[in-house]
Length: 171
Image 1: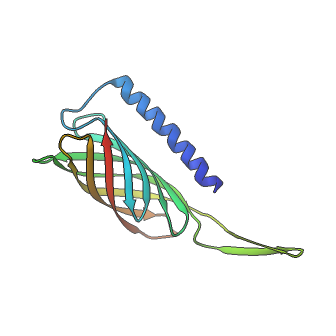
Image 2: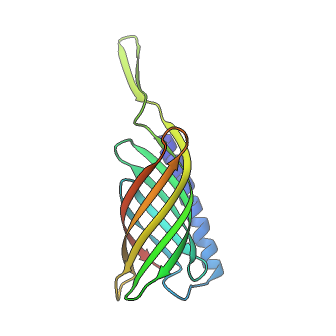
Image 3: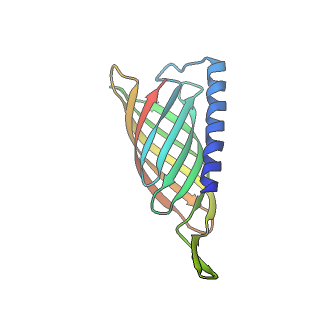
């Protein structure tokens, strides 16, 4: 639990630093909003933040959790957005992630009359990609989208696919 709290504090610090940098630049791309924050619901669910510093080039930071294992992922990706007609857009990107999973190595030990149970966390790092589609809802600063994220883990897990639904607020 301590690792998740530390990861979350680090993510919030990076998010605040990125937001301050974005407002200091005061640039908005020709298409869409420069910043958006939202929720991702899928295999890994959590908070996402995106900033586009050029018309179609940007970055995404995500703090995601996987409910079955109690693990979490902190990821940073570069993204390229392709605007389509009728308020649709496609995006693709790649980046790095680091995380911790707690589903493995359940252990217990006995001290006197008491028995203690716990799990040993398994840290992992890897490469991550994203391919998604998004629709900006007219007359609101909201969008909804679907994405697919393949992840290449270190030697512990060879790969993993994750699909998710995104709801984002643009500002």
